Length: 306
Ligand SMILES: NC(=O)c1ccc[n+]([C@@H]2O[C@H](COP(=O)([O-])OP(=O)(O)OC[C@H]3O[C@@H](n4cnc5c(N)ncnc54)[C@H](OP(=O)(O)O)[C@@H]3O)[C@@H](O)[C@H]2O)c1
Image (cartoon, rainbow, N blue to C red; front, side):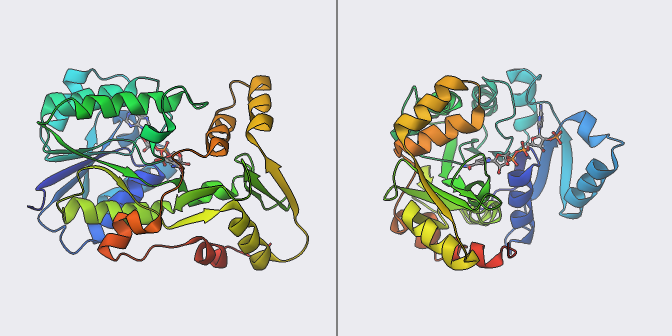
C-alpha cells in the first residue's frame, strides 16, 4: 500500500501531539506533508504557552491549518479535508455532542482516501448503545456511517484506557495520594491500557506503513491486566500500606444516580460493567507488528516515588 502524500491531524492536545511527534520521527515520513487543524484563534494566539506549542508543532514539520470543528459546517470542513489524503481525528471529547458525527460526514463528503475517527478508546460495538457514558452512543453512530459506505477507507484504533487515567483519583483505580487501590466491578475484571505516546507510535506505523488487514476496527494495548494484578504491581512498586476497595456495578450506579452529570463517574460505570474494555495482547496490532510498547510494570517503574 502506498505511503500517503498528506496527513491532516485534527487537534493538538495530548493525543494529536503524540501522533504528530511519532509521524515526524518515522523513517518513512519524508514524502508526506503533515498538517494540524487548529482554531484560527489558537494559531494567532498571543498566549505565550500556546505560542510555544505552535512553534513546537511547526518544528515537527507540520503546517497549521485553520478550522473550527465546533462551528464550521460539514461543507466548510469538507473543503479543508479534500486537500488531504488522510484525516486523523484527535480532537478530544471536549467538543459539543454531534461534532464527531459532523467530522465523519465531512470526511465522507470530502472523499478522503483514509479516515481515522476519534475512537481511541474501548470496543464500542461490545459496549453497545445506552451505556452509562452517553458520549459513547455517538461513537456507534460514527461506526454506522462508516460501515454504510465503501468510498472512504477507515481504521478505528481501539487503545483501551489511556494509561495515565489509571492514576487519576477521580477515575478511582489508583489514588496515589490517598494510598487506595480499587477494582471497578471486581478484582478479576480486566482492562486494556496504552500510553498516549505509544498510541502515537502505533498510529504512525499504521499511517505511514499501511498494511492489509488493518482497515476497520483494530486493537492496540500496552498491557491488558486484571485489577488484582494492578493492585499487586502498585503495592510492589510503592510499598507500605494500601486501602483496597471494590467499586462494584451497583455501588457505582447508585453514585451516578446521585451525581448524574459527573462525566468521570460515567466512564467508571462503563469499566465496572466490564464489557468491551479488555482484549488479549495476541490480538493487537502492536504484537502483530512486533512493536514493543510500555506495559504497566515499566510505566510504574518510571513514576516518581511517593
Ligand atoms: N481511552 C482513553 O482513556 C482516552 C481516549 C482519548 C482521550 N483521553 C483523554 O482525554 C483527554 C483529552 O484528550 P486529547 O489530549 O486528545 O484532547 P484535548 O487535550 O482535549 O485536545 C483537543 C485539541 O483539539 C483542539 N480543539 C478544541 N476545540 C477545537 C475546535 N472547536 N476546533 C478545532 N480544534 C479544537 C484543542 O485546541 P485548543 O488549544 O484550541 O483548545 C486541542 O488541540 C486527555 O486527558 C486524554 O488523556 C482518554
